[in-house]
Image (cartoon, rainbow, N blue to C red):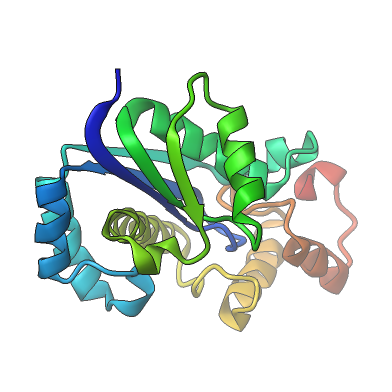
Length: 222
């Protein structure tokens, strides 16, 4: 039986070529929503890294339940090779968290410009009907989604820092970041392979392969 708590879902790491996709969910009481709003919880993109980290602790202390799902680069690549697009991959991750939260009402940030379609996809992975609200920019409208957004972004930043400690500076991890592309090029030049944290199904990797024109096993970029 669902509780009377209100849940929020959001992700971080959809676009990067490096690192996992992080999905966070929180379940909050009505009183907690007011408390977090007064504390300054809002869309993670409008907060500094220091502000997000500070608020993340407050969110975890205030929430009734906090859940996380991390899909590794290898998992994302495997699903994409099997014909599962990123929208469905995110829906799978959202559903896995939603089942654990057990909230009476759930709010989620839409993946893509069609929130109704994403909501239908998400429901298809659930065994029970839920009071589900999916909207574009929900992280700007609802404190519960903002809270999930902050937690997801903080964890994603932690994962990138861990990878940098292991591999060296790699930029933001996004394909549009020249530092990230240079990191991939230099890594393949030096090691003749890609780190396991790289999403090999991303077009950025195809560009690295073309630019260096390696004669290598197909498994290198598979």
